[in-house]
Length: 634
Image (cartoon, rainbow, N blue to C red; front, side, top):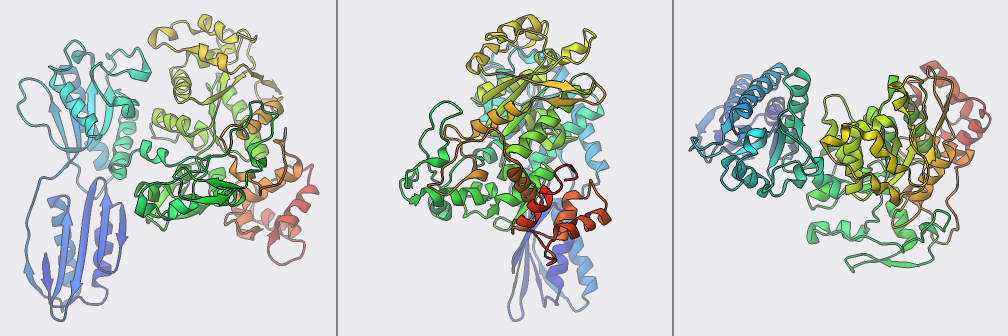
């Protein structure tokens, strides 16, 4: 705490700028600023009386106070009229360590120290302005010290601890304490630890590990360490808000109660509207044609007309971060979110409600998960890419695709897969021999079964003659009980972890892909039936397709495939960034800048702007596209 004679004009602004430069994010008001980053917080407040100007700083670490003192001295030199009259400093509590690395036995202890040194090295290499703190704690009978209090807890797990009883093992006791407190945990599994069941790989007697089931496989190389480092930094930034917490408040297909959302700061609960269950069969009337006039939310507090419920949920999505904080959420325009996702699945959008950049994926997560093995020369990947494009163009649904934003460089692919599967509504399984033998693919399938997702099996065609390369496709049985032949394909893959392929009997409808153009330039054929099944599935059960929500009373059935007018309408929506129903020259260029030059976009804009008002209306866009049917430029 410091007292000054005056605060010159611009002093507090400059101070906040200097402090913010050492942190990751800043939130300011008229008399306070909060800076956060890498698990550290600096809170600065100021007050002004007639002759008494007080500045108070609360920090997570002593080093932050030292940095704050340096910033003050710099500004005192800049404002010579400022005189510091008083300074007081006191310490309470303990500094929380950023990263705690816990081990048991010689192998895991060696691994823990290796992780500590390499993480420190990467931290220094990235020139992060706040100091790094980590500690290695070996849990054995000879260690009488109390385990440190850490923000992120890394558990190094080897086979050395498997033989001991959970109740007698100090490492296991610590492990249970961390899970019980819902601490941030990163399990690191050594190569010698035998995993027989990926769904429950941890030792018996460890409770509460379901929320931490995704582990990091330890490898003593730069790629593995960079992956672990990225996970640590992400958890330091997100604090106690886990991905599970965020995904629990985000769903593409929940009909939220608008009134409950505006009262959330009082009640803390949000009601939902449930539409009547649709009959089984994809040719039945979809839920949008229900004649029920009024609905009651699940909290039995509010009543709304069906058309109003659909209109609200189809036009906007609440901020998941606001919901998590139990505050009245900011609502994002859904067309804007879908447009951002269509361009980049890693896109962020700023929420003025909680002053945070929110992942658009958390606001409107993709409804369709595409699960596949890349195949020889990425052949299957190219086929799936084409299927994704057709699904998105024909249905307006968003697909999770690993190489286009679903998983990014330097991210934990298993964790991203886990989130993608848990948030989706449909799980499309592209079956091949390589898929059956792939550990990652098997894990995706197990997670889909575990989460109760609707699965659509698709047989990948065989494109290669060589025996090993031909495994990129499905050579097995395609009859009514085709899944029984998977056991003959698994081979050694079945020895590591058991997978119940019999679950596929609940999804008897299968689809066949075919491909033309040879292995050099693959063209997928016969996707129309698959696209129709995907779209039809969205219209059944309690799943609501918000983008196609219609006013009550309108009659419609799910279409096999959208016609051209609908296709052009979807193109227009993807280009209309601000959702105002018109395209500006900037919006058209932003949407086409990777495909056309600026001059080409300018000429295209002039052609489409029929009335010359400098904007392209939806009607002008569709008319122009109808004239360009043979041109795939858009």
